[in-house]
Picture 1: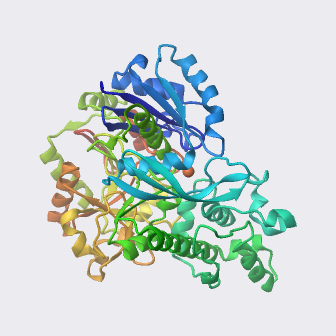
Picture 2 (picture 1 turned 90 degrees about the horizontal axis):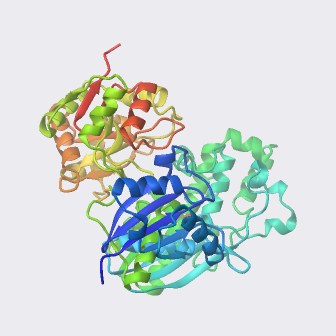
Length: 558
Ligand SMILES: [Fe+2]
């Protein structure tokens, strides 16, 4: 069989593009990185961005053997013909097959394909999957091997209320009696509370951060599900909060303004205990050797930590692109499976699967912006940069291929000295422009994680929290959350030699092989992808230096 090329597409919110070539997933990018619209939410195929990807990779449409698309909350097979026609209109030379794939199955296939396992149970939990006869998927469990897959269990939720876009939809007094009985997913419950706390769509991470500042308002243990047959309604948790608000003579909305940290803590505790309990059930009922996790709820780092603590004796894999951006990975994997009978594996570069820009392109971008830059070889660059950072400069980095997923892992990152509290306050005020309660995270050299954190962990994707050992608190002040945890990215010299070198050079000066690492973007934009994006953000913010490939520009000190 000749080598195949497959294209995976996700539409809806967090549109994304993935390509398999031969037996590997070789390319992935979120469309927001290209169209520069956060979450790139649209029901159409991202034709211009697909064209840009194919052009840059040198793939002609006739060379694509199959395309597979996913959406959410639809009946995927029903929209396949429409999407195929749209694709064919844009690429008339395309001669391959076209598929549309079920949402949760796409999550599951993407997770197994990128995992190191030959087979696993995959637990999927998100806001909503695809439509079923009377509802839509909420949580599901699949068995996936490299050659086969099937649904093991699923829980369905009622179709969302038509009022879901209205801000009142999370307030119990706006529901009729019938509506109050409607079932919703764990993901939608967390989203409801996120809105109640005053955040918007896609801002569940803010609820997670705020939760550490509060205490649960009541004992949620009696509400925790024990298997997939549980009931969770629009008013669950919220009705208890409503009762507490009433006892203070307040409406729930008034109460949420006064006590939102405790409200966030209540939801966080509920989600942690619920997911952990469901994983306990899966382990007891099915005794899997390996477990994978996908769906947006598994961006919840404290929950992931609890699962690792309890079930670390199993093979565990949390997909770093577990939210809907990862759908295109599952879609591409499915197309590949349709043609070859096996799922592809992730290329060794995973999760660094996006665009790479050459040093010539980086120099040209600086030149076009009228900025004079210096070229350094990698060794000199690591030393120069370490010195700048130890002197309190905050630097934007764009090197190598961009990362898949919402967390910058060093190739499209802003880095700063973790010892200085001002690193955080300066980022909050002049660069990221975000609320003070949100923590920043450290990247740490793999040889030092055991010394700095307990428990030690392999966490290359910034998906697990860990406690900072007290003797290192003073060296990691800018990256410790209020609960003394940090969301760590472990840097390994085999995969990212430049970052590892940078951390060791920084340690020589500072005594700590760690840096504050946050995504390279400002408050309103997606993470930068191209040198031109990086320069725009660099000039619009208080960043002190910018590294593009091996070219460095440092702003004059003011
Ligand atoms: Fe999803």
